[in-house]
Length: 194
Length: 160
Image (cartoon, rainbow over all chains, first blue to last red; front, side, top):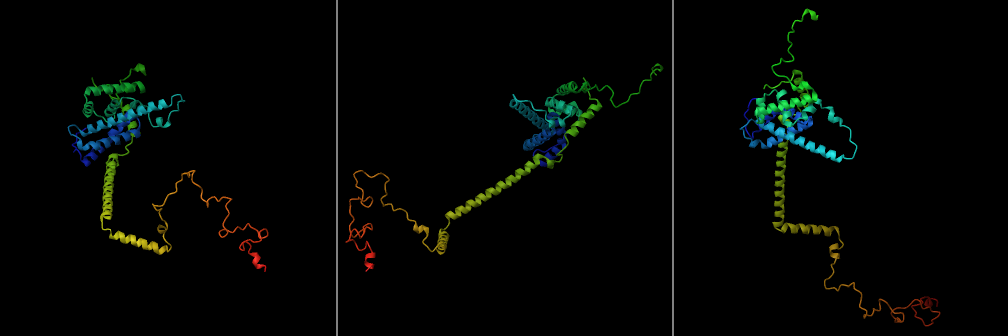
């Protein structure tokens, strides 16, 4: 994650920032919201907010980190509003028979995406940055302005929650263990095994 | 404490689901919402400036009409009046219509006082006899009254 110089208020630089950040933010916000349309909407909304504040951007920290904060905050606001809407729906349906599950809700969402969107937003974001985009804990810490210890704790929390929901293998393995794809030479078995 | 790593197949599954579930719909900056919003904002600014200019021009026209020389307006009024006279030879409704004169007594809807006597033309008393020259009554027949008025029976003069 290299630091790129951006000139605040410059339109071409903001376009460059958009091209650099859009794919990563879309996947992070998809993990937070669990809905691709909502993720797209939040990313676009975040860029609209950032573009309005772009002339006042102070380059004392990377523009990618600034953009990441705006996007995650937008997704957090979206989740809060969605939760309030859900509570309102429950209140309206009190005393009525519960409707069936919305097929559109479960059609395009896998169990993994559901489990990710059930995590706290920043925990889900860190999990995607670490295991999908390949950032190190230090890079994520710098991106979010927190300590590496905090990032480690969040990743551990995410793995435990996913292991509880999807299976124990999501707890991960220590890096000292050999990669799964490597085939180790089998020890020669004794004749008695044959 | 070293960070745990996901097994390869789980990392691949994560990448696959994130990539297929959220495809890049607007990877170009020109497709972004902020770009279209900025364009719409600039077009709105153009429309606003045009509206302001139109308003100023309308104000200038109104001011020139109200504050300008009255001669052209009089000529216009006379021309319209002449045209009206050409197409309607009868007196114009403006001339036919007369406003009530302010000095005319206005009939009050209030009931007349009881001391007033009703006028004769409104309710003639049955005891009153009409004067002979004023109103010959066609009800008087010449048979019963031989010296009746000659105008009451026009057929008497023609029979001779």
